Image 1: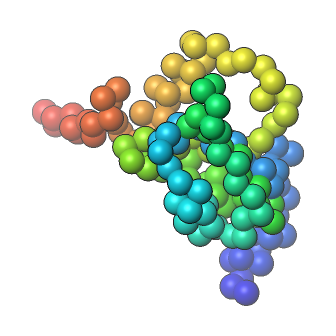
Image 2: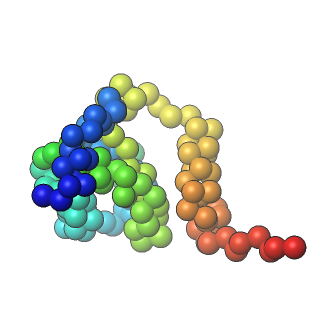
Length: 132
């Protein structure tokens, strides 16, 4: 095992980190195989549950075997572009999951993601500001 991998395994994780991830903003037609291809790159995946009901489409739960693999997936896949949709990858938190998120909070989260990844509301890359 590489020294960096050993060092990362010995660090303390924040309390919100879990083996279970909640993913939003998925393309509705994504397959389970595609999900395993994307999320399996970061470690052994125990289970993937894709939302199929009207109100859960575009969401999924991913359960990793190892908590460090889940952390790597969150670190690398938050904002990842899949079929022109930017994934929102979060740690599963049952207390938060039961609370409805207001539209204003969702808009704010979307704006932050757009700024982070340099896109506008139409998912086009913004041109850099002209230098004077």
